Image 1 (cartoon, protein in one colour):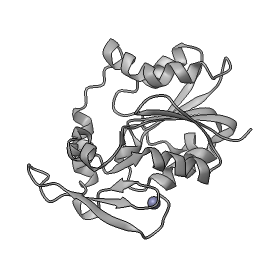
Image 2 (image 1 turned 180 degrees about the horizontal axis):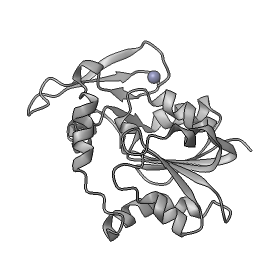
Image 3 (image 1 turned 60 degrees about the vertical axis):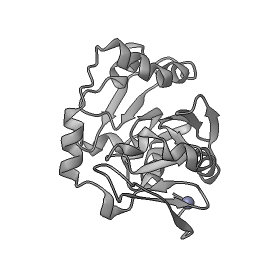
Image 4 (image 1 turned 180 degrees about the vertical axis):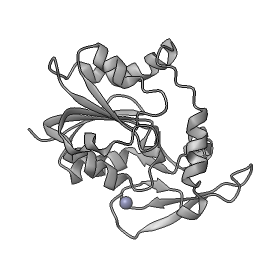
Amino acid sequence: MCGTPHTELFYQQTRGTLQGREFWRCQNCQLIQVPAVHRLSLADEKAIYDYHENDPQDPHYRSFLDRAAVPLQSRLHSGAQGLDFGSGPGPTLSLMLTERGFPCAIYDVFYAPDTKVLNTTYDYITCTEVIEHIAAPADVLEQLLQCLKPGGWLVLMTKRWRDLAHFKGWNYRNDPTHISFFHQHTIDWLAQHWSLRIDYLSDDVVILQTKQ
Ligand SMILES: [Zn+2]
């Protein structure tokens, strides 16, 4: 994330189909990443996403997303326009926000790859369960922040690691498509780097605001 060369091998998978998979930690910003040699090909990655059955009408999926949507809505003015980045095979959050009066465009590198939507600015951007799949999260965040108006909101939903003991028992790291793991320090670092205000809402939802 921060680009410093101070990284160390933090953990190596000892069992299962992902045996040998390495996790490297940045000693500065505490981002943990899986090196390129241990990542899936794009085709294998997409095959796994194709299998995700995200039904936009599923009330359980909607209530999961509401942990991001409800606190975001409370901060938006009516008619605020947004983008759901990484909308996946069954876009749902964008529908929920649009239904509630906050029109939401979508972008997804696999399923909605029209980059025109990245050439405008928005009042809010949502990025839920996405950033952990991205090899260069700093580049993506920089791009998203350029798409936000002053005082705009960026909602990140990704689970955060806490310490080695937590990481060892953490199911989240066993998903072969998860390659970037944020710590609270990683969020703190990026907020300071890009001058963002942080609201930590839970252990996997954070809302960031750009300067007015
Ligand atoms: Zn770093």
